[in-house]
Image (tube, rainbow, N blue to C red; front, top):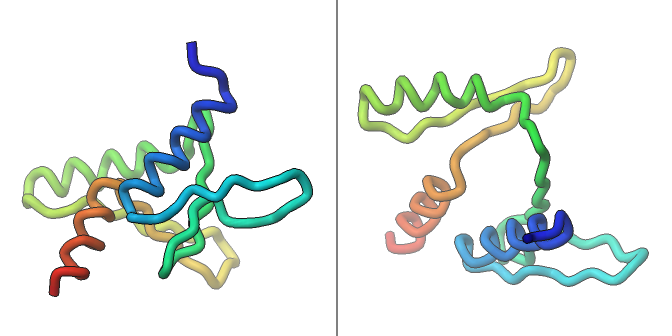
Length: 101
């Protein structure tokens, strides 16, 4: 049986592999991104439930009809920042496509 500690480490490993990065093993009292990458500061979070999943499911439904990649844009009220939610596999494909051009 996998422990909680191993499950989030596995997420970091999967992310590093998918995006050609390197998982960062931190020591206590150090603050570093979870994955070292040449373009991104990657922080991985594993949670039992994510609030945006139903919204993303709606985007997936529309994407399936059109053959496009589902993408969700989220913004907190009174914030100046928007966030992009995309499946890791789709993001990996986009990164690989841009590296080949």
